[in-house]
Image (cartoon, rainbow over all chains, first blue to last red; front, side):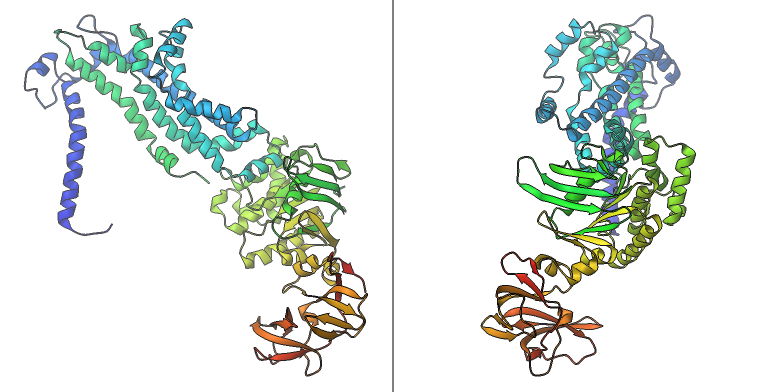
Length: 283
Length: 352
């Protein structure tokens, strides 16, 4: 729309600015709180200008403290746990889905449709629904407080399989036939054709799944009891002591800001790929 | 070397009826064969069976004397050019052409030489670093041919490779394919539904209809002596006029009229009389009465569409001659030669 009507322009900008404020203000408050002392925060009204304790608070959060209410574990370690978990989930989901979609689209085997529907059914059974049996299995396998326990139950993914299946169906049959004439076997075709062609879809999925993995809350809450295996999202929760205890809100806020950085980075760095993956398929 | 022998080949899908009914053909080394027929006649299926992309339900196909029924496509020593080219979209032109050789573990240096040579022949040398989507339709078509050439196969298979090109480019590419064949001398099997392509490219053509071979022969033979009414109507544009009537010596009874013949029909009874539009001529007064419906000016020539005793009939006349008036009745000269006779029941040719 190319219209020149100042009133509408101003209105549009006003709405957008309002929207940005609504979204950005809590983030700003979080950041401001993370630069003040615990005392400053509880003094109502809290100052909306950044305080002078930024370095001190973040260092304390990252390295952990010797005393205080709630969990005092080092957030640095939690960030590593979260990062490893999110990466394992993202890569695991992508590789498993690629392979299962490849099998479903390109191979004629008995019970192929059964396999497809079985995968499809899990769409309706998210982790939350099957949480007790899954916990039992993971616990019996001795996987509590391990990366395997944190990631494996979350890796199987109907959504991603479905996405790759749809993409593979759009790859022309002649491409497969040309590759066959050139002497490429099934795995060679998978490696040389399908994987390069699904790069953009993989990038889009990576962004989505990384954030999904990073933001997991309920499942890690159940399977981790050891502070050294807390992901950062759980860490935040554990830092808040219940009851009347004086929480160190400045450190909680610093942790929250730290927890937001990696997903934000992933989105920003992979933005062009992400949009490409959702919009076009390179053909 | 490079010969193809097709023996009693049939194709059926699952338990369904056969779509190809026992085809026999022998193709000599270095021959350029065009398989032509209307869509759905099984010509692509036949080609794909030679390629190994479709299973052979019955019969045998041998390439260079070796039966290939159970041999993988890549091991049949063939190369195929697909209708949509099927170029690998994420690879450069060079990699597209080199892919098959890479898989065959040909040394890098030799791959380079072979790709460069093929690119030289096809004038692709300047485009080797491009991606397929950066190429025009004609260039993509040449890359698809290049991919076939670098493999240095015994047999080229073409599956309607020109149908995605515009008319001008198609004519040009046709000539290029001819030159290429003359240069490389590789046995080629070319599938098309376009009879002009078939006539211009073929050394011998296979005319197919409904899963059966109607005729195999040189373009000249197929045109001059079509083996059936199907071939007569399919090859040639506009198609041969076919008149279904009753022959009795030198008289041909058609729709209540009697057309006199210069020579007696090969036999008496129900027959189909065929006459190509260019072999009929407009006369003055004595002859077959043609009721003119419509004129079409094509430049060098003019088509006169009309009816002969109720049956549709087309005459091709020189464009410079004065045309007859539409909705008038003119006389057709008695044709003395180039008459074709077919059995009214089977449609098979009757030699005069």
